Length: 422
Ligand SMILES: [Fe+2]
Ligand SMILES: [Fe+2]
Ligand SMILES: [Fe+2]
Image (cartoon, rainbow, N blue to C red):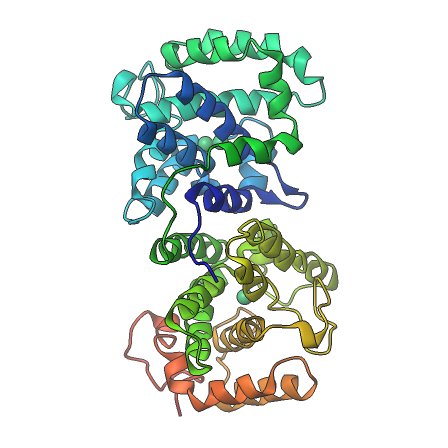
């Protein structure tokens, strides 16, 4: 199995998770990236700068993920621009793989004329940020007016952009944009889903692929996003990743496969970014309707990760964690004999971590014995892999490493909380 991915392919896939809502993904990032990239291609800049524009625009609203419904869809223009740009910067700034995107993302709403908050102005704003700002503005105007034919929107949108040049937007960037947006094809491309693939694959030639360690680094950032979406699951994805990697190791996976399993664990709940906050944050058991909505999360995990066709197993490992050996799981109802070992591992790790972590409706942590009993029961009903459940409890201490810190944020309480090594 190959374990390196073109960065553009990875960012393009993960960007879909940033704007998930009830109805799927809005493609705001893809379209912003297409506009930004076309501007960058007209400017006399280095190829590396063009790549930076493309990559940063695909992730530019990373600081608003999980709040897409509230902030973006609500009333069109959203508030809190500075906050989400700053949140994106903080998420990325220390990342080895994505640190270079941090500044362009931090300033993608900075005003050219300096009338905004205490931000840089004019040419002190990184060029990539100025380009993304203009592209984002155009995409937002297009999205707001989407009931009208795209070619009828061309003139009014260009007029608005021209009026913002020298105020919000860099006039030189707007001038380039106005010029390339004269072509009808530019607009028709933007709304043509069938064309998107071609646009991105044309730009995938010849660049370095990401190595497994960099993909892991990026997966950790997305795990932070996923876990931040609910206060009750502060480190859920990290622990599922830890437990799944342990099981993979014990089952004899090679080192690269174990790292791939770590990534699958970190991203298994990626689709939870599509679940509305009132469901994720509910302080009690979910009502039946809410449980039904919750079922879409693994569907989106699968659809997003299956975009990574050079990393074929990761989508199944990550997204089949609610499929069961009796074939009655969701969302694909995969027959048990088709459930790969990797998928069964993530399923066991997910149930284990969910039972071990504190939940609002479960005031006391479950004891090791209670967790084991529940999991054995599920294995007996052909819901979980029996052998893996046994293997997990043979290595219980190792599997729990670090988890007892959840409750009080320190190591002092080791042994006092229920689910600690006994
Ligand atoms: Fe933004
Ligand atoms: Fe945006
Ligand atoms: Fe999970």
